[in-house]
Length: 272
Image 1 (cartoon, helix red, strand yellow):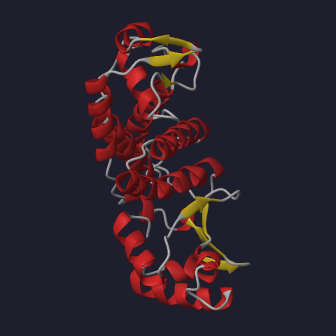
Image 2 (spheres, rainbow, N blue to C red):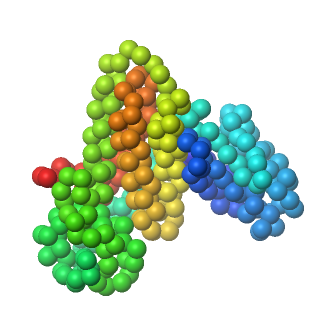
């Protein structure tokens, strides 16, 4: 339901972009396609839009209607009830690789803490991997020197100091959890745990963020979603001992985080 192919198919069927968004409720994602359809003349009313969405979901996504709730123009789906929707996801991280290649080829001057410095000086100061990740996440990539939003203390390549370290730790945590889950004899299920439900919702939003990066060439929203996934992976691992039912979810998180690191060519461990 959350892979790029299905998302594109739903968008084509309904005539509007099909976009999931996080909900305040753990494990739930929402979609406002009904309102967009009315605004753009694709449906005469929210009710008519809901009927079209129900038909499209029924034909493209088996089982979705059993879990979909329509309320005031919003479609909500409890991902935690069907975690298998997330565990087989596919995400294209090629834009990260392309952007990394571009930054390391151009090597622009950067602004850190308001001070301008060369790419080489910044790489030596905070580490090449942390600098590259910060450039991928830059709010104004076309401005030179490129302003990096975070202060040097956050960008520096030290444990607990930068977002790249967070993603690497989450990948390690997920790998350890998979190993522990394979040995566990209990089966508690992720949907009963708030942290697990939030992790599933974060996983569900990755393919859309990756598809948007491919379409627009902007990597920042994808990196933001990857960081959210990393945070929730770590939180879930800290709150709940891994069980065999958690195994597919942690494995999916591990694959996504590993894919992001690899495509950004930042997967090699760095000394802290």
